Image (tube, rainbow, N blue to C red):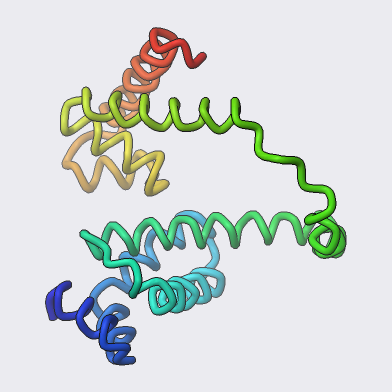
Length: 185
């Protein structure tokens, strides 16, 4: 089934969309979630959460690239689950639950300067990634977006682990210099 057909099922609110998405992209979501979470049960729950979030978000969102949208949802869901798990280990989640109750009263207004800095950083990172060679960009994103290990990247790109590590090192150095030049660090 094509992505357009799957999206059409979502738009029609046909539950078959979930089954088709799981069949076509379940392994993509599971591999990304597993790299972040490292636990099979958490990974399975994360994939289920991603499918639920897809159901809730399509429509009104109509993604241009279904695999990219699923990857972004999976990454965010897995990172949230990992953060929540670590918070629970620190105090059983009780402090977090208590603070959630009073958060509306304690929340400070958004810091405009911090938000503008964040936007400038996002735009600079996008420009930087566009300036890289396709191979360097793929390696960098595989490591820092998809959380793949250098060994996994090397296998996927037909390279040595050493060359992947060297590419990452050089790209990080270029990024540091680029951000300095942009006045962001």
